[in-house]
Length: 318
Image (tube, rainbow, N blue to C red; front, side, top):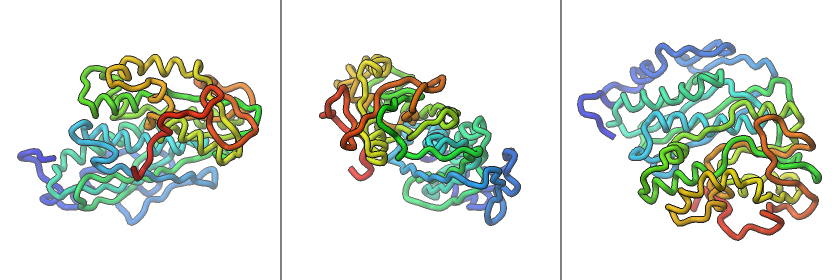
């Protein structure tokens, strides 16, 4: 990515670039030391900190001929924030590591940072530090910190027979968007945009924890794959109801037809929507919808009472 007339990372240098990225940023309450020292300092009212990290590599997790730098920044924050949400916590801060070729325009890095702040700010979280290095392609590594607010963390291992499975957020949209981009199919702007910038249901993780969610995860690799982690961790069988997934199937049906794929397969295995899926012993909170049940049995995920023969979801090393 080049931009004639714009200074590059090589021309400006590491610390002047960092100064540009952090100037005029307002940190949220709880950050007593932000960027500019050897490390940040945050208060931890709960006494515990939820920590998660994830990486995006150019050409593997995003493409700069599809995504604007701002989109990449928003996506990097959103996918980490969803992991914090899935523990029943709220995001408090992010630490970002970024690698890029030395000839990258500084303006592109500024746009990346703007996207990160655009996503993090409404969560009440700040970007409190990080690192900037040279690399052959863009690499964005984000560590997210979260606050449980006095609640117990919601693990993958607590689902019990007789509970219901529910989802907050949408399914299949990002997977549909990816196919549209990859196959060069125009139109469907909302779905194409959904792949570039996911839309986690912020606030629903803590809402689920408050009403006693037994197990929870975000849908990053695909509904079947991620529910499979809950089934394995809890030692239960999960059975999804296809009629309950009809709104998602309908939402991606036209795009699936254009791409020549089964819309239900997109909903079950598309991934990167970063919806939340959880198991509840009773009624589910507002914003959640029941899509399945939990029973005793071998750890597996069924669809309409049967094993699914299609794709199981994203594999990191395929």
